[in-house]
Amino acid sequence: MQCADVAERLLVDDLRSDPELDQHVADCPRCTHTARKIAHLDAVLGSALVVAPPIELQQRLAQLAVGAARPPSVPWWSRLGQLNLADLLAQRPQMVAAQGIAAVLLALSSWQIFGLLSALHPVVGDVGYAMELVAASPAVVYLGGLQIDLQGLGLWSVVGVFGWLLSEDGLIGRRIASSGLRLP
Image 1 (tube, rainbow, N blue to C red):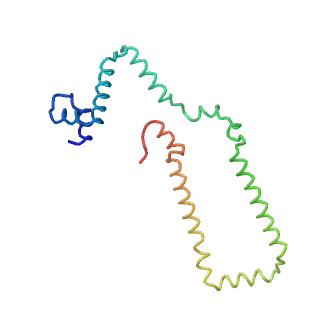
Image 2 (tube, helix red, strand yellow; image 1 turned 180 degrees about the vertical axis):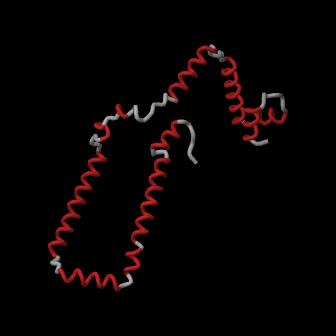
Image 3 (cartoon, one colour; image 1 turned 120 degrees about the horizontal axis):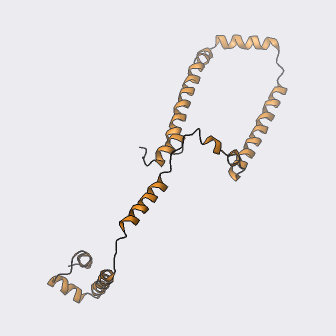
């Protein structure tokens, strides 16, 4: 018999007389110590007095837990009066950093655009020549498909927004998650 088997039987069984178990516990100091600790734990747990709380208290606590877990639902239009724009527009460190990066990118891009516009001196004849080149080149096929690509982009954007609404961070998904249902 192994020490692991003895420990398992000491924890599971009700310590009936088993000569093999008794022999191993008598010979092994580790198992003897484990048996003493388990017997002490059984004595302590056996002397503990467990009293069930009154039914009224159980019902009141259960009602409080259910009420706290599921607040009453209020239509969204009645919550518009509680909307606090100051909280939404509060300056958080992440927002300040994002605004700073956006300002730097806007300044750099406008600098590049104005530099490009000042370097170019278009001539009216150049525009017509460029249009002839575009009309005669195979790029017309790509330009003709641009509208379809924009339609596909718009469609997938709508699908993405709908998916976000259903996600746990979206408006609908947050409501579903708060009601206790789990999304797949």
